[in-house]
Image 1 (tube, helix red, strand yellow):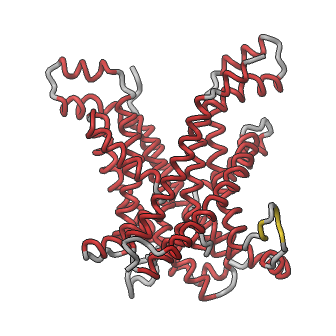
Image 2 (image 1 turned 120 degrees about the vertical axis):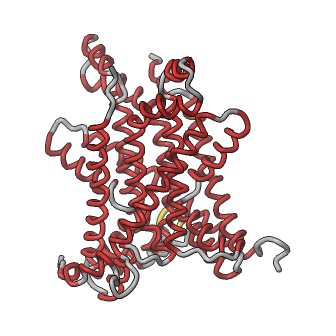
Image 3 (image 1 turned 90 degrees about the vertical axis):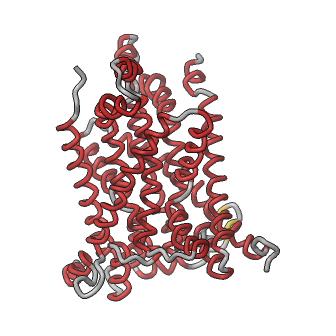
Length: 241
Length: 228
């Protein structure tokens, strides 16, 4: 029919979908890595109320399905927002940034849902990284007469970063994999595209095979990048005067 | 916020159209979770033991398969099983079965690494002493290694099972009438209060996850073998 593989038109669908997957994953990862750190700091706050609130927040986002959270942001929030807001969000606003168009409401809802979900998991990885720094390190810092700000910046965080890097890389891989759920709210990312190609061509093997390969490619690239980062040990650089 | 939509449809959220039709809703979510949790535990244990015992190319092959399962989105795996098996083998897989198999495979792949790491975390002297006492490889594993390694793996099992409960919601994409699917059905039917509906559904999942996290965590702590 198509000389063995998918026609160029369908390959283009898949590649476009992969582009959406990569864009969403990259934006989500960057924002979630930052938000996760803030949440971790709130969780470790000496102010009881802040720490408890952050704990509740993390528990809620970690223990409910991403799919339900996406439905909440996509269907629920558009019903809660005043009508003219939703209209504004759905309308086109010309050039947004970097010459890209204003993102669709599907993309916005997917981005918010995926970011909040991922940030909660990343916060726990940061926390585990910080908890993994031996207590003696802090005491030694104090014994040297360092202030708590310096202890955090020069002693705890560099070592915590070393501990947290591999699990955080794992979380970034999870972002790529979890971005597939945004197909349920109609975002035309890779899984959505593969399903569409399958429906049109009845070539399940090629459609899902190509999408699976692209996912593995993305995950492998993140793994490789994290190996490079780990090889350039952040601790060694931080220790330099 | 108006939660009347929840109380009006509570029974439907909980059991779907049962007893007049197939069971659905939260009850089906629980059944899917139980089935895939059990299957993933058996698979994870078997593959984990195989992983820790195999060297050379069989170990490499196993590692590759597990790596594949961990790199692929759950959704993709569900597609593979649900849409591809009928085409390739001509067997029609029901949605519930496809989801259970997909979740069991993914959960098993993650648990296999936890199990193998748990076994490897024991001092070598333990298995050497067991072998020196004349126990066979299998008996050494069953009587000496696993009883010590299993409690160490309990947190991994709890994490994985919580992830499984959440992942049962993916059955939605192939039309299995579990809790998430039922929720969108109600939401589409009444056309109002989607925020309330999804908050309620999230709360049900939260409770299910907490039961596993707190319940099993407590049970594991009670049976933990303390180092002498």
